[in-house]
Image (cartoon, helix red, strand yellow):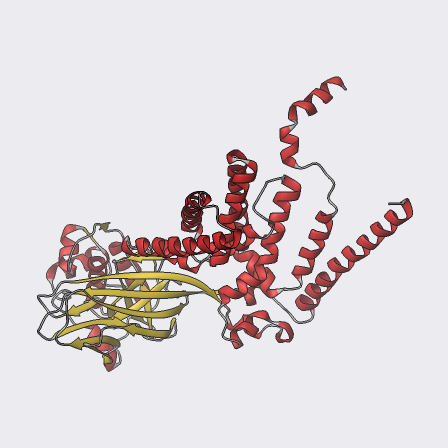
Length: 531
C-alpha cells in the first residue's frame, strides 16, 4: 500500500473512531444534564423466585396439607403465584386473620405425592428511627390490644419475665429507651439451634436460643412493659435450597409496626431479602397426622427493571421496551452484553494471545452459564464436551460421513444434557439441573471444535485451546454478569458504539501479544544484555 493510501486509511479510521466516541459521549451528557438522567434511577431490583416442594405419603384416608402464602404489603409485592398437585388434591387459598393459607385437601392420596407452590417476591428494605424520649401510650386501638396478652409460649405475666424486665431497666422510662434495652438484652443471648418450639421462659432460663426463642422472649418483654408486639415468620432469601425458616418481631411503636430481629441483629430495620409468610405465633406447616411429610424451599434471584428505570428517557428505553413486550430481563442482559463479551474475547485473542474455539463462542458460552451459575456451568460444559469427545472417538472407527456424524453428536449432546439434569435433580443440585437451559447448538459446536483440534493438531494443542476457551469464558462471565456493566449498558445503550470503536482500534492492532513476550522472554533478555 502506498504512503498516501496508508495516510488516507489512517485518517478515515481516526474520523470514524472520533464519531463513534463523540456520539455516545454527547448522548450521555444530554441525558444527564438536560433530562436529569441518574444512574440511581435505573438500577435494577432483585426479584426472588421462591419454590416450595412438598412430598408426602398419603393413604386411603382424608389428607390435608396447609402452609402460609405471603401477603402483599408496603414492603413486599407478591406475584406469579402458581401450584401443581395431583388431581386427588383440591387446592384453595383461605384468609386466616392477618394471613393467607394455601391448602391442599383430598382422598385417597397415593404415596410419593409431590406438591409444588411457587411465587415471585419483590422486596424492599425498611428502616425506622425511634426517638429515645418517646413516651408509652396510655391506650392502644382495639385491634392492637390483643398483642399485649400472654399466651402459652409467651408468658407475659410470669414473675421471671417481670424480674428480667426490672433488671435491665425496661419497666420504666421513655418508650424508646425501653425498646432499646429489651432488644439489646435479647440480641445478647447466645445462639443455639433447638428443634421444635422454644418458649420465652425457656430462652430466658437457658440464656441461649434459636430465632424463635429469642423472638418470643423479646415479644414477652415488650408486652410486659406495655408495648404491643407479635411474631413474624418467613424466609431469609438467598439463592439456593433450604429447609430452615426464620422468625423475627414487629413492635407497635408510634402507630407503626416496626421490625426487630434479635437473632441477626437488625434494630428497627429489615434488609431487602426478608420475606414475611405469616404474622403470629404459628407453625409454618400443618398437615394430617401419621403421614410422612417433607419439604424444601428453592430460591432463585433475577434482576428486574425498577419503575424509575421504565420511566426514564422513554424515547429509547430498552428496559421499558422489553417490559412492554413481556420479554424477560435475562434476555435483555444477553442481547446487550454479548457485544461486550465479544470484545473481551478479542482482547484475549489479539492482545494477550490466548487461543480459543472461535471468536464469539466463549461469549455465547458465558451467556449460557448465567442460567446455571459459574461453577455448575463450567461443570456442565466439561461433562457435555467429554461425553461428545468419547462418542466421537467411538464413531471414528465407523468412518461415517461428516453430516451424519454431526447429527449423532448432536443427539449425544442432548442425551448428556438431559442425563446431567436428571442426575442433578436426584441429588437436589438445582443449579446443575438447569444445564438444560444451555443452547444445544453452542454445546454441540464447542464439542465438535474440540474434537477437530484434537485430531488435526494433537492432544496438547487441543487441551491448550480448551483451557484457553474456559479461561476466556470465565473472563466473559465476570464482565457480562457485572451489575455495574449491565446497568451502564441498559441505561446508556449508545455505549455499544464505544465497543465498535474499540474493535476498530483492535482490528488494526500490530503490537506484540503478551503471551509472545512471555514465550520469547529469553530472547528479549538476551537482546537487552547485548545492548
